[in-house]
Figure 1 (cartoon, rainbow, N blue to C red):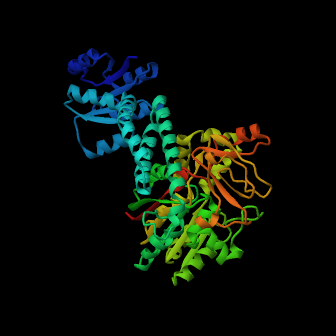
Figure 2 (tube, helix red, strand yellow):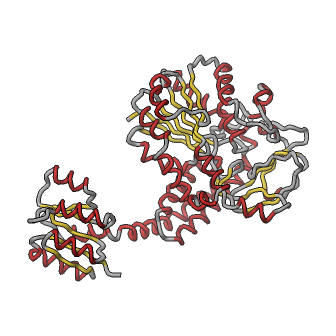
Figure 3 (cartoon, rainbow, N blue to C red):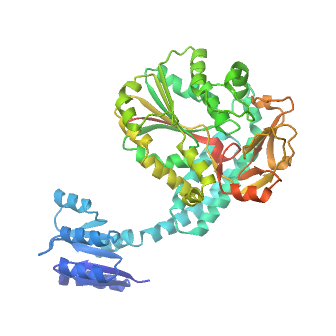
Length: 516
């Protein structure tokens, strides 16, 4: 398809050699010598690009630019000027030029500008496809050879980088290839967890990752002990790729000092992972030491009502006399109220704010057809997260907090994954209802399709009955009961869930910042 260009310059006759050069490259070039004619041409033709002289009699280039953008805001306009005066450039940028060139221009500059503003998406797609094809084999080798958590961290970071690039590409084929590689990675990661997770709890194992119950003790408390107050933001269901999607928004206000990925405990659910994080204990120890604060899956009451109490108990056990402030989204004040008290709040040694909004998106997506369409796949889910964050009370609060001399920490308790493959399981009425793990007795399942923990005490998990055991879904699987199977599968397939074993659920970000 031919590219159509409008070139507006009161000395257009002096540019005939440039126009001939473009026509030889199969570009269609229409010319105008003034702003009025240019506006008429834009109104009656479909142009792909406008070259616009800044210094013209009658309507100036800036005035013409403004009027073009009013009627056709998506039409790329390249300003050409003899002057490099700062105020002219400021006005042109403010009026949303897409590029600018300084006279005298040469054919290579013109051609480059066309490629940047007309062919950019096609060129980016082609480069993304070519680069990923070259990286595909190397990543595949890494997946097959990964034997440690740190090696999986490196793999996940590379896959995240590619997922964000490929999500911007219109090449559906490369997207399908990436999905296949991500599936392969999750299959191998599931095998890695099955072979290593129990051993992580061996006192003699020195090759175990940082896990939920050690995050505060190993990373945050030493910062406070060094004399630095900490603002800890815990965003439920926050994946590493979601962090990468919002990183650019945070960068003008907070400088990233530390970025690492830690492993959540199993199950990767709020009840287990978040309670472990705040208590500094594995769930079995919570249940034994504070039985009134542990709620089993089958009990009909809130599972995360005692996070603040568990945090205070951890501080008491470690002899930490910190002043703390703790709030969750269910009790969080409005942004204006928080802002008015923020300076006082941040005088505490540790300020903890828990945000459940991404979890709300996940549940709403399951229950509402409109939300399913808004977050139809991973790319849309990430985009929705970024849009929420950009306009959220949380982002407004982080901007305000950047004026304080505090260390900012953003992390999560677990991630989430879009489930696709139903796996049949049978249990009694007391079996937990989570789609990605089951806790119960007399569970009936195919052992090859799950990770089973027959002795929960080996991984420091509590059990309500002597014969209780845990099973965990792998990769993109989710558990479905045989009764009303088809309805159940249709309702939950392609929803975002957590609780099981996948890269996206278990490998989660821990981020430290200081104000810019």
